[in-house]
Length: 140
Length: 281
Image (tube, rainbow over all chains, first blue to last red; front, side, top):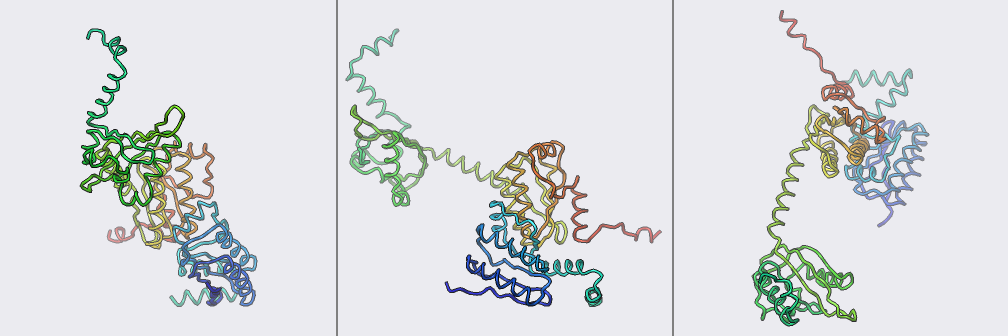
């Protein structure tokens, strides 16, 4: 299999990483490098890591998810892991990898809501952020 | 006649052998026959004929594998069974076998290795019995067990985004596995963020079950959903703590109603008293 790249999409102040292929070790390491670079470059406030396309997981990948979350967190961009399939969740738990400290959500939509809520909470008192809150509230 | 024991002792070796031969040949229930070291049939008895529908002259000299299903023949099951019998002295097992007319029956089988005084393998003794009826009953029991599991682990959507799983009766490892899978699937299919596991109908738990429940909650959390346990009985509370199960990260509520209240709260919903009735006064 040729080495593909996992696309990293910028959505406003967040980055969306959607893994739609089986992730081999090399691909995962590349993703880690590229994602941290993109976080720094774009100043993203959060990362959505969509793993709904992932059907199998091993301990390496399990740890990789944790490390990505930890890396982006210390770079001030919270990672929300979304779309984990039941089989993957069961496997991770059986391996004892409960990913402490990793924020999760059911799907991209809910993950996005969660990220918005969290960045809003952390940015409280910030004029620009309260304005955007006001804007979305007014828009509804 | 009044004293049969000395009579037995007095019998000649030939007479005893004859009686044994009759015992085996006339046996109506147990198919007993001898195999050569290579697995070819050497003797046959009445029960074997009844069970497998072959007459003695049809099978003597044939290989044992003629009674096995095609799949088992391909898997070289006969060779494996004889190998085990030769190595350990005995093989015991059950499996599907094929009659002459092609129909199948479930057989209980024992193959014993026969060795001469020098320890050289001279053949095998094979005893088998039709256990189809027992197998059928086992299957019914298994089916009913499955049905019971299906019936006893309903996952309901109580509100948009809120699932309830009332667990009633004793949880064993198998059932907790089903609970886990059902719940996780329902979380995905309904897109629910909160699940209430009501255990008020569970009389006891053991370490395995408690760990299973914990795993279920951890797996749900990984998928982005939260679990609330409601209705933990005093005995279970004691067991859980004595077993050293860490419930510090788990939300527990006394009753299903309180669990629901909490679930609604996490979804920023609340049940309020309608003011309509008052307005009509």
